[in-house]
Image (tube, rainbow, N blue to C red; front, top):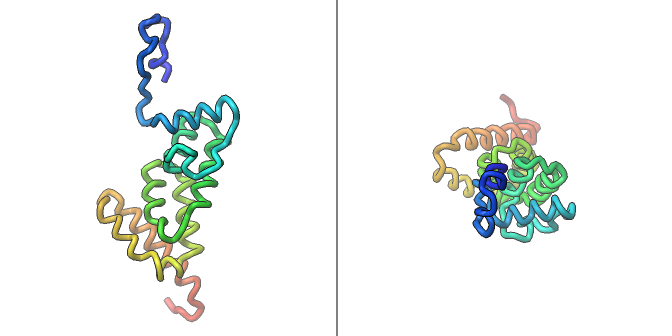
Amino acid sequence: FESSLNWREEGCRMAGRDIHLKGLSAGAFRVLLRFLYTHTLPEREDCGEHLECAEMARIADQFQAVPLYKHCVRLFRDGLRVANTVERLVQAHDSQLPDLEAAVLLFLKRNARKFQREGMSTLSALTQRPDLMHVSIQITTTLADALVALAPNFRR
């Protein structure tokens, strides 16, 4: 970031040129600047910029905007549904934020029966990502543990 804005070396030659921040979309940058300058937190899960909540959480974490990060984690958690559990777990993994992964796994544990009835077909999304075998194992383990705990007469 600093090298992109190194005015002393570049002088006025930088004026009017685009600044590229790798891994940061224009929408996420607008949300970050809005927060940094006005302390305004996004009201909607897409932050009003058509973003994935996990992306904004990753950016907030990267720039150490702790209140924005915590808010994005809350929005991410509140947006969890059986139908998007697997998609959200992939987003959490890709963002490399343990708080998001933990939120999805806790949701899955609390909604194991409903996921078993309504969400099993969403697991097919993982076939597109062979690098996420451990995510499949996390889901399977979480579901198995939760369902065993819910079955009072189940014997091991």
